[in-house]
Length: 317
Image (cartoon, rainbow, N blue to C red; front, side):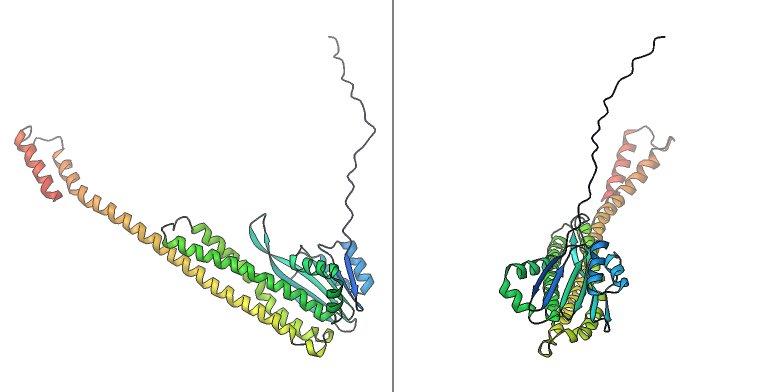
């Protein structure tokens, strides 16, 4: 049996090698003796470079890289800096849910370093504004790192209220849908809004105590006339918590109301079915009794048919 010819494949000498993209360098601004460094999703190398530059503790670098870090404040008085982990709501379009966006903050006497795990638009916009407007940057940086941190947190908490407004609009729309006869259709929507409120509460609840702790420890980085500024941040967190408490009660009431409406509609259907059952039951009983294969009196006569028919009419009435 002749051997089959082999297919010759030309060997290419060129090899395509995937070159990993270089990590984004941290953006840095300086004015009035203060430096602000901002970097989204820092890598181990970048975080270690910043730690070597400012003398951070190695555990803080681990906390920056950790994806499951709780909100906290660590005060390193001897080293002269403050480390904080804060969470803020971020809408994840992939899963269409609210997730916690982590912000790691290092505050020193002459620097502020913000390292969000995901991009936080208020921080990015404030950094770009300081980058583009030199006068504003000098005016803001001249008040110290504590005041700059306040501006960052103030913009972040202001960004939280539009998310609350969207949840409020959803609750209003759900209330209209419940009473307009679309109860079955809004069950999933109520569940989604309830999940958003629960996620938001999980983010804000540990934040309240953390902000009170931050208010006490950040005083050494603030001038005396600016020490009351962080009270506004704490009040903002408390307002958000109160609104979420109100929304929680509203969505639970809407869920109960929707279940009541569905239950009433099911009762109406059962009432109609009961009427048909009551009407047809005696008729079925009569036809079944006289439909037996037996010779009853009057069997196979016309007058027996009319007697049975009359009995059925009387039972129906």
